[in-house]
Image 1 (cartoon, one colour):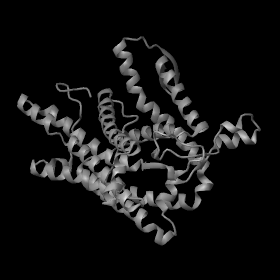
Image 2 (spheres, rainbow, N blue to C red; image 1 turned 180 degrees about the horizontal axis):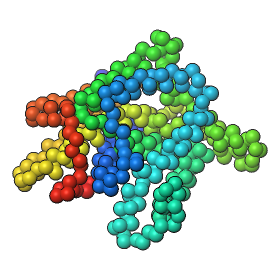
Image 3 (spheres, helix red, strand yellow; image 1 turned 120 degrees about the horizontal axis):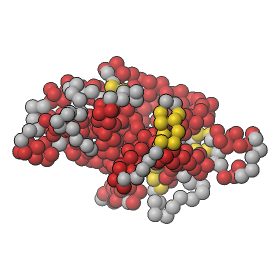
Image 4 (tube, rainbow, N blue to C red; image 1 turned 90 degrees about the vertical axis):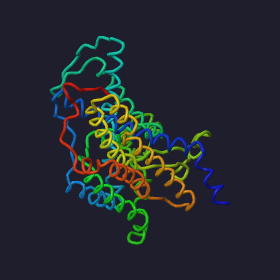
Length: 371
């Protein structure tokens, strides 16, 4: 009975917002990845084309991630300022990538004139794009100065969406290989790393605060208003929500006062969602009769994957509440997302098509559609 009462925390505002945000971000990442791929194919612009992972790259991701974790565990303080600077630059480009389609959409709907104002790095910028650049720069600077958790989440979400859009899985075979490897990776570093390294490496790295290079430079130059620049920053490698979401966060808050979810726990399932969404799009495009179109719309794999993600995330949070210890979210998310897609595609006799993938273009002269 006590365990049941503990699970009531799943209905707390912080838990509900975390779940809804994570599900929304993974779905939005898949949608943006599909739109980006169609846009590149339509414009024949492959200067910023996405990276398609092969088997060796899929195997290297958990290995390189493990090496990075070990280095950060021992050398975090030495490289924290570099990490902050790199994150700030990455966040700027990610924010611009996420917001630019919305700016273009609003301009087209309102019929606004958007003249070119300058040319930089072989690219022309319109007036609206220039304003967007200033907004993105201002957002990153605001995060550096305040370190506020809302800005941290905004930057983290933009990085997640940009990653899923630019790193693509070609088929379920490579996807399954990557997810299974990361499944083992997550379990090892959360459950077993303490036995080898004396501390939970994953949790330790995720909860450390990085030095702020802006504060360091301002201090060395004896600039006024230093009290406004935070000395330490939570890097946007996770989304965080105060456990007392409605009551706000005190000035002396620490990581124990927040619920958190790593970006990898959204980005990795998001890559699977992007893969099945592209498959759904091709299948809907190739449906010729009204009955086939209706059937395709009602049985899209994306909805099974999104539902599985939500169930897996709730299960991971429930396990964390019951055990009062950090949980490897991919332990629950991998079976709940990959499992339904494989089982349902097997029953529909489409598993081999998903397993091997296709090299088809998402755009077709007679069937081109917009997301």
